[in-house]
Amino acid sequence: MDIFPTLLASLFAFLSAYAAFFGIKHCIEYVRMFRADRYAPGIVTRIKTEQRWRKGRSWIAYTAVITYYTAWNEKWEIEYANPLGSDAFKVGDKLTVWYDVKDPGVFTLGGWHFVKDVASFFIFALFLGLPGWGILVLMFKQYIHF
Image 1 (cartoon, rainbow, N blue to C red):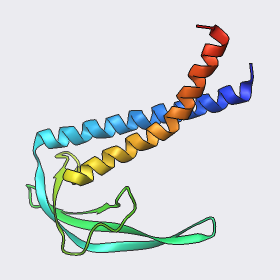
Image 2: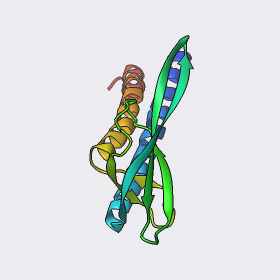
Image 3: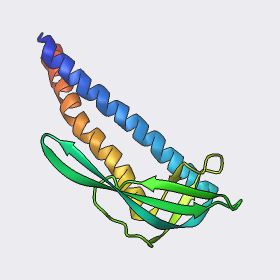
């Protein structure tokens, strides 16, 4: 039995299970926020830009700064980076922010933003998991003969 392919497949399988666990946990938090029905109108007050480098190439990362007021009239500024990496927001855009009552810094924007957040977790877990779990199943089939 070759140990390196088994370890590599196990690593990918573990990473996908880890990403899926935190993705499911994140989704449960979102559902809890939607069920609590605490939301507030928010507005994009500014766009933060950051130049990033990787492998000799640079790009600009955009992060929207959203301001909203809770039910207790507390002002919160939150930062939201689009998981798909595009500059989807403009200053002045109005959004609905669902927030956690205990910690208003924990939030979701709902709608397509929610779908993109959830999809980003599960796509990541799927791309890590398919090779890892597939190789592990093939290796166990080869050695167990079923």
